[in-house]
Amino acid sequence: MHFTDDGIVIKNVNIKESDKILVILTKNHGKLKALAPGARGKTSRILAATQLFSYGSFTFFESRGYLKLDSAEPSEQFFELSHEITALSLASYFMELLNMVGDSDVPTEEMLRLTLNALYVLAKLKIPEQIVKPTFELRLMALSGFEPHLSNCGVCKKYARNPMLNLNNGMLHCSKCHSGIDGGISLPVPEATLAALRYVLTSDLKKIFSFKISAEPLGRFYDICEAYVKAQLEHDFSTLSFYNKLMMQNTYLGDTQK
Ligand SMILES: [Zn+2]
Image 1 (spheres, protein in one colour):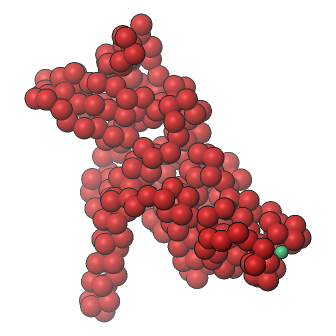
Image 2 (image 1 turned 120 degrees about the vertical axis):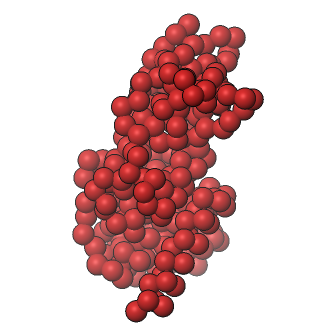
């Protein structure tokens, strides 16, 4: 049986001499794992379309519960990412995150749109990574069933005063209501940071990366989203460690060159 769907390659692993195993985040069929026979051959028709970050139309052949990639037509490959090592490593982290969340039968259309928008603004619009990274992390968490509850205090149910976010249960609470929370780590959330968190959770995906926030609340927003991902998924991402090392080096070089 053949079927065709739009999707993006979020993982590719070389096997044998010229084959690849791909994981493709599709619009209508969730995440699919498929064998791409001969994909690495120099004359392969699917060589370009099976690269990481390649978006396009994929035709699969299903036989006895296994999927094979039959043909693929790339429409966007985000080549610009390869010019900038921090953007490239951030995009690789996004792919690792996508591989961690969402089972094959979870609806993935919005996840795919979020991913394409994130890669687009990183590669082509040069929106600062400090905005793109936490925004992608938080909305992806929400789309995968890990949405934090940011309306009122989860303990007294009133407007949260001196709000804090518990990273482990995703609950907002007043600082004085901390004792009513059953363990875990809570971080203070300044009002401007809370506004950004709420914006990212509710915004239309087209406008999700375009918001203004000043440096200090942005720093908190950045830290909270990363810590939230780590606490919710209980996973250390090798791509994230690499990205953070690059950022530290850049900061160090920036300081020494002043
Ligand atoms: Zn409270």
